[in-house]
Length: 444
Ligand SMILES: Nc1nc2c(ncn2[C@@H]2O[C@H](COP(=O)(O)OP(=O)(O)OP(=O)(O)O)[C@@H](O)[C@H]2O)c(=O)[nH]1
Ligand SMILES: [Mg+2]
Image (cartoon, rainbow, N blue to C red):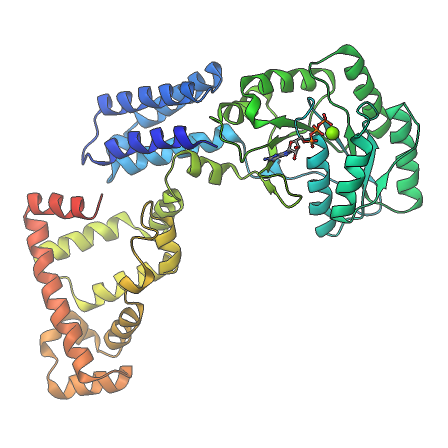
């Protein structure tokens, strides 16, 4: 899912990322393209408008235009907006009660949307969380429905409540509740029948089942492949029965994904899970931020930016820049930089978050042992030595090597490298063109 929209987003953001300065016009163009991409993906028009307006307003503010890295700020805004569109982490959790009372989950949706499969997947999930789950066969319309649930129940090791020959789903629901109390099941998942189209009889039937169960969760199962139709249907279920959350099934299918993007916003109910395959294990919690990253085709650059922001101190950065320009950047500064890189996490994690870096850069390309050695060496120096490495004579170098568990040639190598680094920095800060070239080479 989302392949084509994610391709488009990547290309829009790449265009913007190539610029070292961003104008209002650039932002307007990008937002316009984003609008088209969303509409192409079949996202609800009202949702697109809201998204675009909010993005524009925020992006045209000072925050982006005056930011150190405007294009990344812009990406962050788009991402945050997208997350807001998809929901929040909290509402995505199921609200079930403790083990002393029976919680009930009512599954509903159109025919073939994935209710029965999802009921079984959910049963497995909750069982693994330590709940005592019972599935309830209240789809009495389709002849093979009960058998299907029984087979799935068997597969996930959860009992299935069935009343042979019963035609009234509300009756099945109330008997299931009694059984749950008697046998101390703390969770009932009730599978109901689907129809091709919404009809009064079906709605009345579900409303009666609902009245018996007083469900803790009323989950609307929507087939991601049905597009905008899913949104319309969800809204009707919400009006007539009331829904507490949405499960988006067949998320693994190759669709444009517009429905998924619109559901939360139009229906106002959180997407709680996504079905990602036909197997009973294929159910995942819906994480708005991860999905947003996927839609934007950007690895997890946002986490990366946030991590950088967390360790990045603007004043500190300016001071550093000045030091580089004046050639007063010393070993202590270098040590600080090494340490702040550490704060961002493991190299492996960082590589994963850089879009396009996975498979291109490997952990071996970055010599972590060398970094550790360098830190140890600098820590063994006095502050005077860190401020001016030139005072390090042969005897002191030997002492520093011994103190850091390294060799004199390690110490010499660090000092050589540092000298070279300072030279490059001087060139870099003096020469704007060289600077731009460097950044381009680094893909920024
Ligand atoms: N690929 C994929 N297939 C799914 C997913 N969820 C359900 N299916 C398939 O969709 C078909 C319909 O699923 P069911 O669970 O029977 O749907 P239902 O809503 O109970 O159908 P009715 O009871 O007939 O209304 C089955 O072939 C499932 O294997 C999913 O997340 N991914
Ligand atoms: Mg079914």
